[in-house]
Length: 163
Image (cartoon, rainbow, N blue to C red; front, side):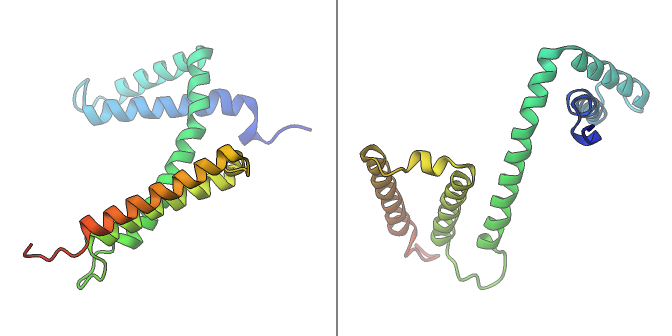
């Protein structure tokens, strides 16, 4: 049985890297106007040549193909963090949270996101198994979190506008 077109080897290894590099080079040349104003045809030809050179060079193509999943995952993680931090930051009159609490909640959000990523990728069990070495890691992590939260509360809390 044949593989679907979108996950076939030719599509993933040749067409998508070519389109990505062509689009990036064309957009960079258009935005910077490196070759002058209204030079879309020349920019497209240069993008085409660079894209063809990429897919003709296995080493460079493999780097691009292996790097794109990391980019996609990182972009999604960053999007989730920014959405959740937007809930914490909130731009409205009479804001209840002070700057110290916003920083604290932002740090807690980052820790929660990292913990969740460790959990869904399976690294949580590898790092925090019930051996004596990992118990030291867990205790050290808890101590660091408590110290950071205490420092944020002591240094960031209780300041009025006049102070």
